[in-house]
Length: 144
Image (cartoon, rainbow, N blue to C red; front, side):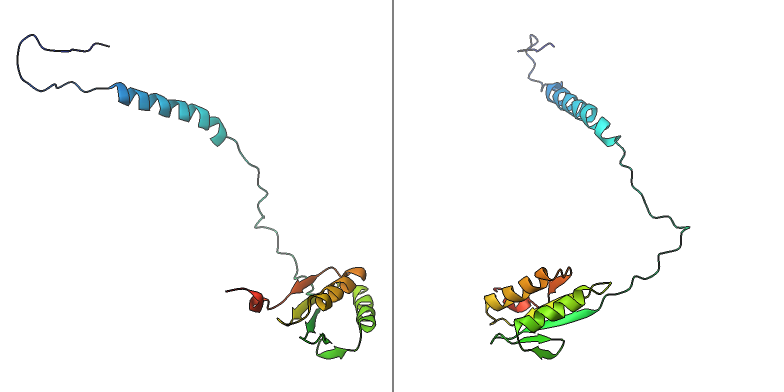
């Protein structure tokens, strides 16, 4: 590379030559980036896409839904019927856990319900091997 410090002719003309050193540096960096990333881009991931010539599977049997509500005073309601005690609730869970497909439990505790009552209901469901348990309408518990 050559560089001129001054001109011998004494002309006050502007320098017309472009400084290509930064341009070459940028091009080398880009070349290295492409060399590094091209092997990554050529890596193929095998995806098993669904076939269009196969008919869709028949609709699965939707499980029964059991609504369990827990009121603020600890009252447990099973599909609209008040449950007198936790022992009766356990017997309901035992009966329902034997069904195939197993019913879904939709637990709807009141915002003012005591935590220990909700925990006891969940523990009873777990002891009796209920698999599908979910909380419903918990938007009232969010802090806004």
